Image 1 (cartoon, rainbow, N blue to C red):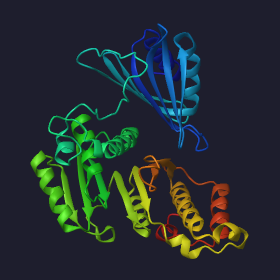
Image 2 (cartoon, rainbow, N blue to C red):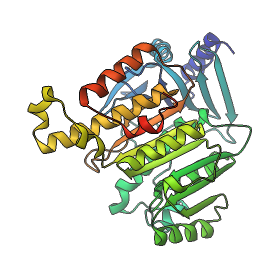
Image 3 (cartoon, rainbow, N blue to C red):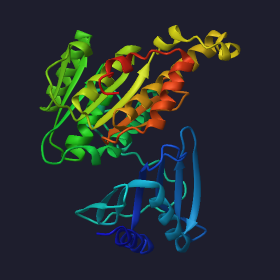
Length: 386
């Protein structure tokens, strides 16, 4: 299928009012302010529209477009993005585009045509529905036995769904011809580890093997018990440290959530050395750069402890993302969850591309770390790759 044939086929189904929902993602340019686009149909004053939700780093914007005007919008979307997941009545479609617009098209017919809710004020569509009971969410105390999300756990439920969106976006980068190996460093109580396993194994039917690693023995024992009770045979939990885990030669996805300070860098380094195709990391407690900062030109800002701490955290994550880019990854910094729920809300998402670094990109990185007097732990760990 050519690029033009792909667009024509999607436009035809949308113009026939077959759309249920769609997510368009993977910006072609890092500088693209819009990170993801979601589509859904709705009726406004008895006229069929497509609602476009533009997802920026911190805000959402909506635009309602009449059907006749939508093909022009779709053309523009595929100029700026490389991936689409589209749910039509009776069919699910996944599209992945190369940089030269070579089309990878996957289509699965659903057993029965779905109905479309065209009301303007319908509830938010989550990948995990908030009215469906999920055994792992019930066992973890997020849902009641009847499948209702507990009021005090609704923020956790939203966080889990946000994480699942990142997992869903990464599907195209995971192997299709062999089992997928996934490691979660610092898994803790493992809400997201269980969610990842459920979504990939049960919802998507992938052949996966997942290991959660944490230092707290009692937490690991509890998670192991839950996994066993749920029949999650390919999910294991082990007591251990990131640096001491040497049981793998190849890993496909590495997840590290809230690993403190350079523990995040250790996990990122291991992921690169394993050649992981997907890295998802939410850093925590970035102290290393704070101790190194010596930039007189920024003293007016850095003399304030609170500002210095926040600047160091942001700069650290920017450096981490840039280092990943330099060693062959497409790396982005994304909002993980609303700031009001947790200040630890930046997620580093990296997909392995193998793309070589340009001299200009390396020069910008060198100038930035020199300006800050930074000696990044991750750069030292990956010096043979840089």
